[in-house]
Image 1: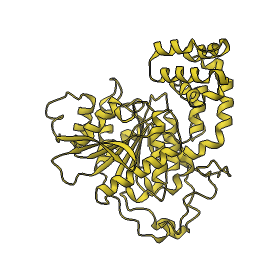
Image 2 (image 1 turned 60 degrees about the vertical axis):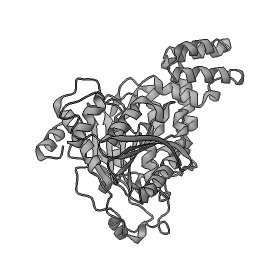
Image 3 (image 1 turned 30 degrees about the vertical axis):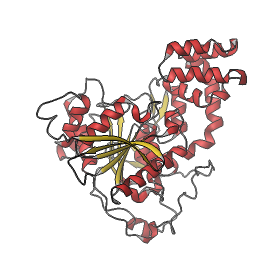
Image 4 (image 1 turned 60 degrees about the horizontal axis):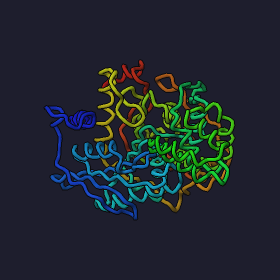
Length: 435
């Protein structure tokens, strides 16, 4: 009932009636500074010990002031959760940066301390979903995390950037998703590395123009573009007209040049350290981060930690979809929200091998955040009940096989398949009461 009420009020903030009013607490909302980070706290005033959740915004210049994020945080808090939304400066400036991982981790740890040491849930939206998974894999922060909900998240940044250019996204089973990528993606890449696309004399005007495009102030963008040299103006014309094909060779070359640094902000490099329950949700029509990334995350999250993984028609990128969603998908989304909403603090880790003194934070054969490259394992294929093929997660080589088993928190057995919208496995799971 809480989950259904939450979704009803998020879809329509003015909603009233039995469902919308089923669970609605009065709120206190105030700006705070936590762990040196500007943040906003949403607290149900009539609950003394409500559970805590950190909700991390995606790549958007408004950050914690973005209206949809504020609406969601209010709705979640009104359902009985104390919500913290920290501002991640790099994401506000359209940059995917390792510094954001520490902002997320420090926010979760400080919020947990504010709540008397109770673990907090962390929900990351868009690229913040992947960064939240990395923070949860970091031994400095793991004890603050109760669970992670990654919505529209990435597994491998380089793979997503290539999708922006090629409109193709490989799946774990070897097939390829082909769909037109959102034009926004290449603009983010060009803005973040504007000095690589424009000559020095044009960098300032080009940056201002691209920033205005990302802020959806297109009149200002056209005015700022007038300061560009003729050659730079021609290139900006391709950008403003979304002519990705004309820029594709240069974009792909830039992605190749940046490739060594992507591991530092890609969950694929870190998830074998994860020891908290994970919930994955991705929109089936997402054209910014393709839904195939959910399949890669479902493969890379340790199987004992994956509580639910769903590709749904009911959402787009990180928001509820516009109409056309069948009742079964809406009910499945209610179940998904209910599952993580009910997730309390997981069982404590009693295994000594999990302590920082015996487990290093970086997998010995994975790239580190500094961009160090290393060999990539070839993993055996695992076929789920839905017929989707993943690769089995590798063992943690810093822990002996016997110790590795006891390092898993005790969580109820859940299906660990990636459930496609209205698939046969989804219908079977509904009959069994899983969704």
